[in-house]
Length: 394
Image (cartoon, rainbow, N blue to C red; front, top):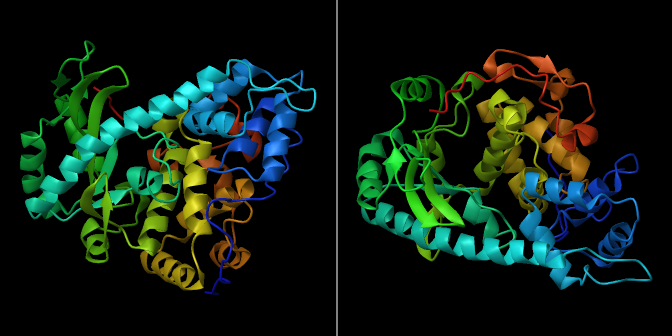
């Protein structure tokens, strides 16, 4: 494998230019312009210009920002860059409070999650349960530099299978139960036996641990214990035990914990993005393609130097994860061209790239997208004709 050049750009600006979005509607171009933690002067001017266009569909923009989990980030930009005010004769964002309140509300929500998850980290550590935080707060408190910018739904923890009984005791003591939130939002109901069997046979996670939040912004707290960063049906395995052996100590949510080492962390993000972008369950729920996931990957990748990229390429080769890594980094580079060195993409690129437009393979129902990537990113009906997932939800 070839090595990557040393990266010197700052991690807070994944792409100064970006993809050619001229064929997209104005609301999509505006959202892609704002899809980064900080805007430079050129991006700010472009955001003002696009916001002032008379043909911009603000309903579609709001829907897209929410679908792509970017609404809090957009709200921060609206406030920080005064995008709700007239600029050079053009109107700004209408109903600016909708966007800014989303940011402030998300910041309060994430603080509530942080308080609870911090207790989980602390008590797992005190019980001797090795764990590492995936995604979520490691990104919000790290690359984003503002926990209010990133929408967080749960906490994903790498835990070795042998430690599950002790982890179960800790979570149970903290009020968590394996199940789903009841319709009344007051209790957690156990999963059906069918769901329990399906997860045990097909997935690399324990069934989610939940407890009722009893507040409008946090209806539930959710902890997922993961034993592998790849799904069983992928034919690839990177067991939690191996990743935990390389884990890096840190502090998140005000508590001591661990995160995967840099090479493992990026590979984990690649695997997560690929799984959700190509699985029928996520396509049905319209969360298969979310700009926020590509942004997560871009921010982490942008921060890496030559040594980390070498380690990453070695790790990809060891696990035989080239197609998955290339899929995730290829599409990330389409949105954030400066995030991934060209040499990395070249070294990972397989001879046959037809699979880039396929989905449903892990479900045993391979199909092909008709629309190119940028168009399907904003096509809200892209999954209407796809097969249905066989993953039970009850």
